[in-house]
Length: 239
Image: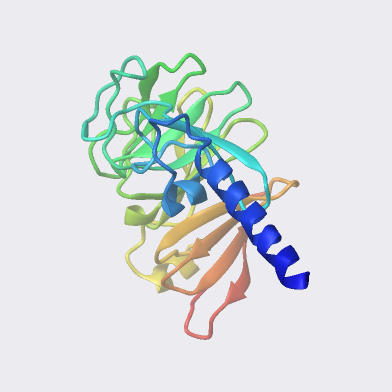
């Protein structure tokens, strides 16, 4: 009887699995592991910029819906316009403001804006470089991370310039932390922190910005007063 019960249980599990695998409306393929992973975030990456849309259940039985927001597979470029006409060139990091606008780092030197109605525009940046100023003048060298605060200010990890940049809602860009000085000793003399390879960014509830520096193996904390403190540092790191 126990064997019979086990067999029945196995058959029920098999039926359940078959049922789950048929929830994709026939034409939509079963999502890949990559697509399952990115579904926990906003689906605007090179892997998710497709015309496909499907539902699936994660291991914890939480249902996700993955669909295209803007762009097209095989349609690389830098084209603004309606969602189905817009083109991206390696979209990577995303942040969402309080008005429902989605900001996407694109091509490592630009930040694109996707409005709630799907309209895509270039918010700031053009070719690689370093320049503060308004959204038409500012330049970035290699964007490796973004974060947004409660006032909709965007913070950018400008890895190529070893700086943390700040963008106001109106598109005014400034250098928030770091220095372009060539040597760390010069940075220390000027009272500024020299980042080596600024990458990930995160904000806490009090508005403190945490910055990871992958080359220094360090985590820095930038307070609301602009003061930089070392939170974690490998013995090979520097301040």
